[in-house]
Length: 316
Image (cartoon, rainbow, N blue to C red; front, side, top):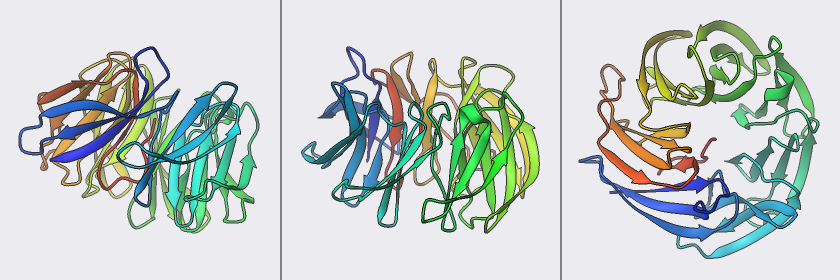
C-alpha cells in the first residue's frame, strides 16, 4: 500500500492537502483525509521528513512546512500570491511563482529566504528544473526558459517563437536530455544537454487541441507522458534517444488533468483532474507504455498537485 498526497486550489471544498492510500495490487484508491488545512496549497514537495506547500493567509502568501501527520513545523509569508511549484535540491528549497514572476530560494528547514530571482511580474515563472548545478525556469509568458547558476545569476536562456508558452520540463537521470512541453503551442521540445549548452534535438506535436500541462518520464525512460487540459487527454510518446514517437492519446478519466504521476514500480499512472474533482488510477503496460482502463477513482476537490513516494515535487 502506497500513501500519497494531493494539493488543492482554494475553493469551498478544496481546503488544503489531502492524504490517500493506493493499493498497488488492485489499483484501488482509498481516502482521502484532509491532513493539512491551508488555503491554495496547490503544489507539494518533500523536504527531509516533512512536506512543503504554498499557503495564502489574507493578503500574504508563502510556504509552510508540515509533518506527515499534519503538524505545522514552520511558515514564512514572504509574498502576496501563492507559488505554483516547489523543488528541494540539496540545501535549498526553490519556489516558482507564476503570478509574481519570481523564483525564491529558501532554507529547507527554517524557510528563511536565501535569495530571489525576479524575472518580471509578467514572466509567468512556472517551474524550476535542476540540471548539473544550474536551474532552469520556464517563463511561460516570455516564451523562454532562463538558466541560472548557484549564485542566482542568469547565464543563458532558451528562446521560443511567440505564443509557445513553455511550461514544464523533465531531465533524464543522466542529465543529458531535457524534455520540455509548451502549454499554448502544444509541442514537446527535446534538447541535448551538456553543461550550460542545450542544443535543440527535435520538436514534436504533443496534442491537437487544448493546453498541455504536466510531463513525466517513465522510470525506465522508454516512454514519456503529457497531460492536456481542454482536450482532457494523456499523450504517450515512445522515446528513442532524442526522438519521440507519439503513440496514442487516451482519456484522462475526468476534466482538466492538472497533474499526474507514475508509481515507483512504473506499473500505475495516477491522474489528478481538477474540474471533475477526481483522482483516477490506470494500469500501465510496461512493454507498450500504454495506460489501460481505469482501475480506481477517488474524489479530490479541485486537485492540482500529486506527490507519490519517491518524488521530490508535485507539478501543476
